[in-house]
Image (cartoon, rainbow over all chains, first blue to last red; front, top):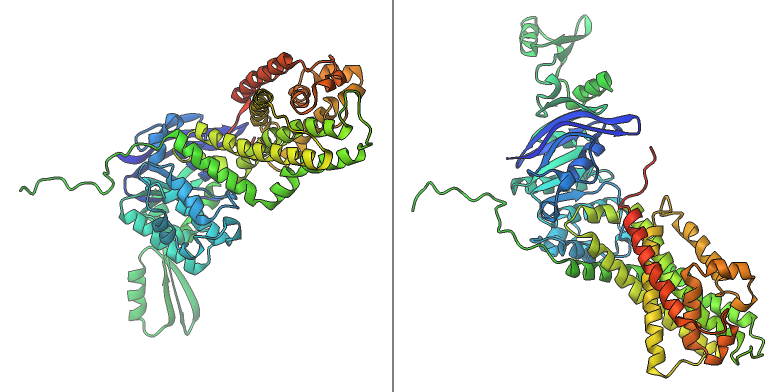
Length: 277
Length: 283
């Protein structure tokens, strides 16, 4: 069974079409990233999958159930990491995680979750006293305390410093290793590349490309740039066969500053949203 | 022993029962009470405000002369002000609290978990109950210490006090839940909800003795619960001789029960018709 199946999803606000026919399939156990600029329909799509928003058209199955009519049992199987919550400022981290653990039939241990999220030193601190990055880790803790089968991570590392971000990636990998399906929306392409097995790029309410981080948008087939410096100055060559170009170059004698640059995920992404947005 | 046994899937755990609404509601209540009393601004500026107003008004109008019926003006204020206390902890706190829960992500976060809406409301009711009991105790203490209010001794009078308190709290809480939707955002909820509260205090004889109000104002205010709450609390906290100061010259307790009961029903209907989980979205 697929964790998420979406066919022809549509949503309009007033006259504005936010989601214009999205198709999406996420297999069980997969880490899937949804990339796209602000206003592309990422959040609307995710919120429909989470059961927070009604759709105007299309078929949606999340863990085999339509989120619009899902019950408590379904909610116990999903975890949601909110993007912008400022609630519960006057509770401590442990009180808040403990409260949410009590809402689930089979929660993780409170201290275990706090430790997983790197908050052990802050367990007794009021949430209002935490830094932005620590606050986000509380959000993550509340999202995973119920031992979800499917976890929604909406821009989870915004405001993290690089070290904390790496720790967070390790946490996501360990959840994935346990078999948790993860739908990640993010602005950070390195994050998608580091975590996602597959990804889709959404622009203007449609999926414009889908694949693995290596192949999405024809990245593996796109021309590479070979550049070098010789007596005649600096050269750049766009080619679909960089190996051959380099071999030919080697036959001609010495060159310096030889570089072969394949398009990065960012190049592909910018091209995709630039063309369609 | 065979080798064909399917390996259990990593997530295949036996389905544990979902926690009960009551247990979750009690946990929400504990969290709500903790959050309320830990917020210094809420305790100092919101919770203590009616006691502050009572001290001010009671002192300003403390002429030392007895009113017709024997009690002093300050004692009448002290009794009436219980109605304000309940409006504050039930109507305003709930209305503002839910609007804030909508804005800061509390409701959205809860909606993403298996908790039921009823458990959330049980939490609010526990907060209202605890805060209201504390508020009423504070106001009674100020009335007794500062203005010589005499607390009733007869159990039957306390019984009357009990049902008036209960009906008042239910009606105010339900209308407060419904009113939380009037404010477009949590930020202006307090401002929006304070207008009817202040208007009703003046027109219902809480801030001003009801005998000195214009006739039309009293007639209009009679449709709302505040007037009957004030009258009910005066009936239990003032000597019976003070009934001469009321509009009808008597305490009219059956009318108090009828109007407050009606507002419980109206409040419930308004809740069911208007409650929203999330903020109103532009566009």
